Length: 102
Image 1 (spheres, rainbow, N blue to C red):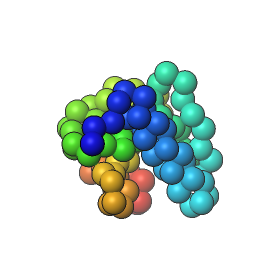
Image 2 (image 1 turned 60 degrees about the horizontal axis):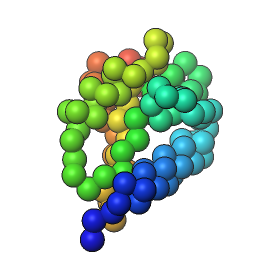
Image 3 (image 1 turned 135 degrees about the horizontal axis):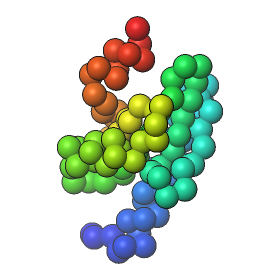
Image 4 (image 1 turned 180 degrees about the vertical axis):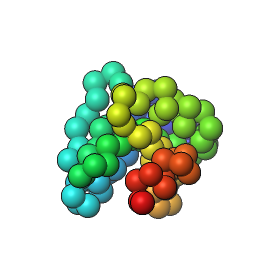
């Protein structure tokens, strides 16, 4: 079954809400970014630009490029994605990962 444009958008919005809730449950302050991507999440010195994708066909390089292009200055772009019946995954550049955890 193929989703209509409205159905795909509703699925995406549900995904964005799921991701927001997960980050908030882990102590992040999360807010939406009107027209600039999905969410901005911060906790201490960590400032993330979250690009959320809830799609079956994975296009990780394209999505990461989108996250990087839309990330406001001072934020680290992070792709958060999942397909149906799978767990959420995150993708980020390895240098950004080490900067956050060290």
